[in-house]
Image 1 (cartoon, each protein chain N blue to C red):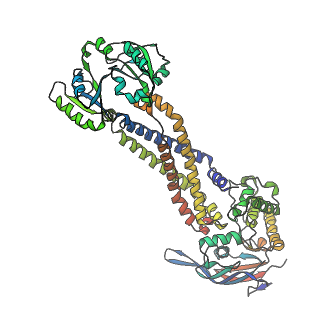
Image 2 (image 1 turned 90 degrees about the vertical axis):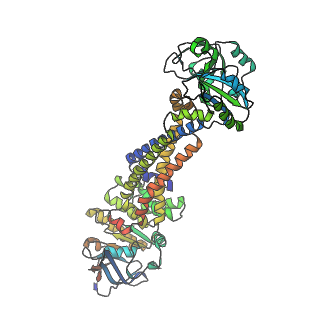
Image 3 (image 1 turned 120 degrees about the vertical axis):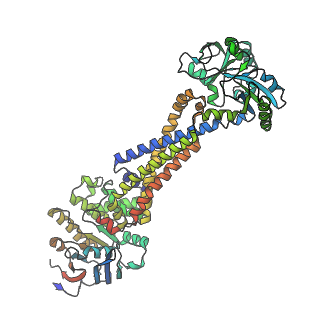
Length: 388
Length: 240
């Protein structure tokens, strides 16, 4: 018999209790890992390294208010600005309203410059871009969106508008790849489709995406643009892309505090449950512990054995929880990713896995130490009397 | 034969108790359990400690076995002054020198007979092969070589106690301590266990100190020591 066998057999003396506690640990680790990964995903949305020199100019009163496209001319005149792209959330769906994905009317002439890093990974050629530019009813779609719907270049995608009263029929001219899955869940079509189809959108756009030459120019640009349009009929709010995305994340409420609150509650609950289970399991073995010590096992050795049981118990639960969450990550991406595009980037990072496993082991040690220490300090003669 | 001098036969003493006292405290109230115990037990002795409930016989056994400490006096067992050992040293000493036999066997229910007997060897540093040989020998000695894979729930009370005896002797200790070893057994199994203990004493020279209420069990020992209210009352050599 090896030590590990002794520890394992001791753990399995009450299979039902062990399975229940492992089950609760699996669920807890799963919950915490998912929540923390959601938080990491949301934080990544607002910390996109590719967006360091991108700005978003929109109406000060909100995204539902439009800005004149004539603003583009002023923006292009600023020496710090490389290019400008009018971008309008279209909000259409394909076949079924539940089949949600991000779709935009965007200035096709500058789109590829603005999102150079995102499209750069596609390896798309000038010829492909020209093909898209040539077809006014063309569109470009991300590879994962195309795969999901079984689309290929040349297919016609009929979109049903929900915000705007048009149902454009778009021909796929290009399928792009992107380093981030969320970017691949998008469709872009020519801005003029919106302007021509919706008369009140002529000359207007919900936002302008601006690319500055250098990140250090951005504070100066923000201040200048907003000051220029202050007190006009269409006042602007200019912000970095990360700040713009943060506004969306904030629409979910103080999601960070909520997630950390739930995580803390789960950790405390599982600590109490594990502690109670280990205390009961150790109390039931008072005599056995006394017999071990009578046979020559030192108090320290018995303590290590009991702690090993606790650590093995939560280790198994933690490992299975992490395994489960990795299996479920794809489901989270496809389900939540449909409701909010940035959740398409949902991933369980190694740091999260390590933190969950470390947390589980710490819970195992903490929950076992107190009853185990008390049991090993109890006089052997008292332990033997506990036979009854 | 009855002796007032506690003459337990010749030979080198394996257990020497000098003015041993033991008290328990209940809040501020001191409850003396043993007082002025002077006793020498020679190697190879088979002693039955007897006396009414509360006379201190189990306490005396626990002190001899090194699982309790006296409040006064000194005790030397198997060549070691136990008062001079710290808890870890005492644990190692027990592992080397003392085998325990309990009334309720106290086998680990999730381990089979082999694994139960192997337990004390896990901390001796013996190799896996050595451990296997010694466990098989110990189980053969108690006639349970065919029950090695059986769990305690699959054994009778007598068989369980024999496994416990195998566990007690597997480290080849000098001293076996038994607290009411037949208290939970029927007459037939009790006889079997007592016969086995007698054999361990006679053939293998194990010194045995056994606490018992049962005169029949005590009759298997070579000497009976009677305690009364925490003091040694008399020693009786058993005539067989």
